[in-house]
Length: 213
Image 1 (cartoon, rainbow, N blue to C red):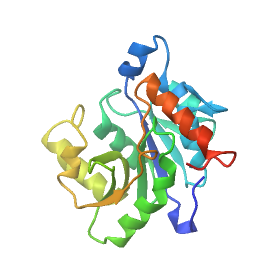
Image 2: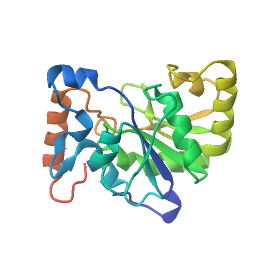
Image 3: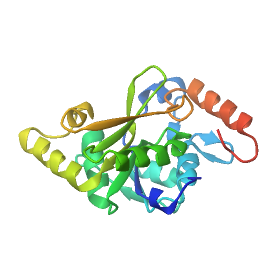
C-alpha cells in the first residue's frame, strides 16, 4: 500500500503487453503475470499495493487485466504488441492526473518507490520524467513518473517523425529532462523467469504479515 500524503495520488499505468517468452520458455504454458505470489498473482500484488492511486490502467492482454484484479481499467496499445512507447501513449492519453506513474506489470514490489518518484518529479520543475536508478547505476524506465500533458506532446512529435511501434523508451527519454531516483533491488525486481518468481516469494516471506519489503 502507498504511504504518504494525499498529493502522492496519481494515475498509474501498468505495462503488460510483452509476450513473456523467457518465462514461458522455462515454464511452458505459464503466464508470468498470472503466476501465484502468496494469495494473489504477480501483477495482482502490485495492483493491490497501488490501491490508493487515483486509477490503475493495465495496458496489454486481457489476461493481464484479469490477473490484476477487478478494480483496474484495461487499455490496448496501438498496434497491439507495439512495445512500450505505444503502451505509454495509450496510458497517458487515458489518464487524467497531471503526473502519471508507469510501472512494469511484472514488478511486484515497485509500489514503494512511487511516492519518491512523484516527489522528485514535482520538486524538479523542468523535469518531465522521474526514473528509477538501480544499485548498478542503470536507469529503469518502467519504474518512473511522467508529466502527462507535455510528455504526450513529445510523443506526438516522435510519432510524426516515425511510428512509435517497436521503438525503445530511451527514444523518449533522450528528448526530455529526467530526474533520477534511487530504487532498491526489491523495487526493480521483475519476474522474467521462474527463478525471479522464487526470489519474489522469498522476499515476500521475509517481509512478514504486513507485507512490507
